[in-house]
Image 1 (tube, protein in one colour):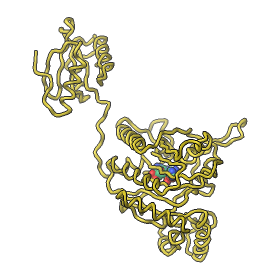
Image 2 (cartoon, helix red, strand yellow; image 1 turned 90 degrees about the horizontal axis):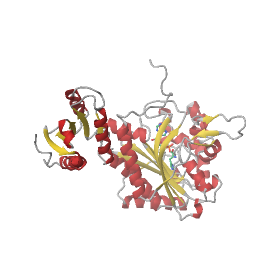
Image 3 (tube, helix red, strand yellow; image 1 turned 180 degrees about the horizontal axis):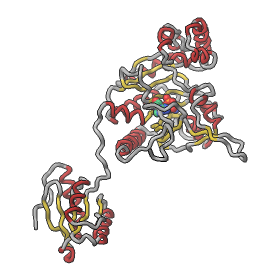
Length: 438
Ligand code: HAM
């Protein structure tokens, strides 16, 4: 057993895994740009009050999962690692006066989040989210744009069978009466409620609706539904979100029990699941509208909506579906080897020149025989070996196409160009490699 290990619930991403992560981050960046969402970065820590007020005091995230940082004696403020990005992004929106920018302000961020959760597969204490926020647009068009963007992200990432679960959870006009009705309903069933749910009942009754406890299934199925109690404005908004989604051909399933675990949500709420697995499995991603959050964090009343997509769970789901791995981009195109084992200077110099010219190159720096050097080039899956021999005095090298087994003499001055030309020809499937020479 090694002396030190990564902290419980955190993981190292090794070079065997990171090519897939890089591809997902690039995809997230690319989609965000195409849809007009601009990158923002906020600190990984915030005043704890940003989350207490933003996410809500009576939520699992704040009550149980916040990584609080003990304040130093000279600092009165208490800080916490961000459990999610939305509250921090909205804090930045207010702090930097973004309400004076053209609205909506469309923002994207990808980075690590921290929750003091009980670790298990797909549930970590440090995990990654791709986050999208549109602040300053009451919808309903932008609601559909964001739901569609999330669906496309999964599809382009190569995950199949992702389903959107959709709900509206009303607003301060219609929700209070619904909450009162729901509380009365569960009180009538108090004797049948598991202890945890009975405790939650008086504190955050909506959370009972998405309880995964089997004892709750029948009680929840008969509970009053928010979608039957929406005020006219919320009902109209919800109908229009659905109309936009239909027009975009985004399939979704209405799920009246979907309430989300954060207090800031109003109206549209949605989650992404691998179809048929929402019972046993955690959500791949989720989001919704938060029309009260900007005001709650000290700004002028401003609507907003966004999503957070968990990259760890996406990677797991891709692996479960047996998705093809991503080729390792760090494979060198060229390995520079030489007949004189001791001449590492010449090998490193030529590799450096190739790198400067844009070619992925490695110099063989071990002082071993040429045969061993060539073996290591093959093990690297390099396309070419550049072999330094007697021709070097005349300014030439041997260029060997390793898969083709062909070799020719190339002047050093032409080497980068020749490698690029042959490599491109190889990748495009034409057989124009270097011709056999002497
Ligand atoms: P959330 O549902 O709390 O929403 O988290 C979004 C996603 O983050 C989850 O669906 C899941 O994929 C991933 N996730 C959450 N906790 C963990 C964990 N412990 N380990 C691994 N993955 C996890 C939010 O965070 C909202 N800020 C989303 C949002 C943005 N709403 C509006 N804008």
